[in-house]
Image (cartoon, rainbow, N blue to C red; front, top):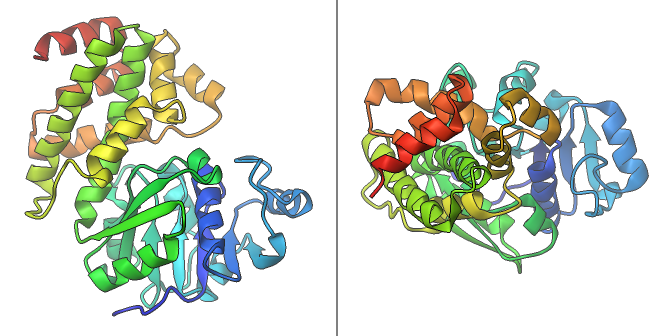
Length: 334
């Protein structure tokens, strides 16, 4: 099914990236619907004119937003639904959904896998909610919410097996600060966005251990190769170029930027924080923590050589010392 336009647009999620996506959508739509789980958060949002918990400097004309805690109402009244919840919370959000998604244009801006199921978000929507693959889009690319809020240049890639629908979503997201491209490599974009979070944790651990720039350069080099090995095995795509923004670009910004919560989380681990303490102090979800376990379990099926993934998993889940694990990892690099 081809969508000539996005029609009525809804955002599902209340975090920083959801807030940035809502800002983008309001640039092309007179009104949007916005599902936020907590009624008190919606009331405070309307009173203040900004999200009280995230990107508080970004102000909205709330008269153009139809807020609702009822996901069924939001989906029923919309043509395009953009899901921007953290991956660990997705199933809990969707368990209340009774309205069919089959005739909707479904977009995921979630950079993670579905925990326990260990499948991509698009696969989960297709398998559980019968969303046709041609109606399923993903958003990838280097896109820190903080920089979107500051109107800094941002590059997004929209993936969909139906390139017409990918372009429809890309057109809706484009503005003077956001450049978009389209792709049919939906699985590659999704897996790449999961892996870059894992590698960002590794970059943070390296920083926390004070390994320096030389090691970081080699870590990034090996991360690109590792990502490419996995994507070539699991999501083969002849047209894919790993050195474009959806893959390498997203990897680099997440490994290097001070806005990266996964790098921040990794830095705390490298400095000696426990996983639980780091999570409590951050007060935000580091998707890579969950993505690491999902990817480790998934790779038991494919047996791709992934020493960086293995090292991060051993540190986070097997409680092996970062100093010991990174010494072993570093000795394997060239």
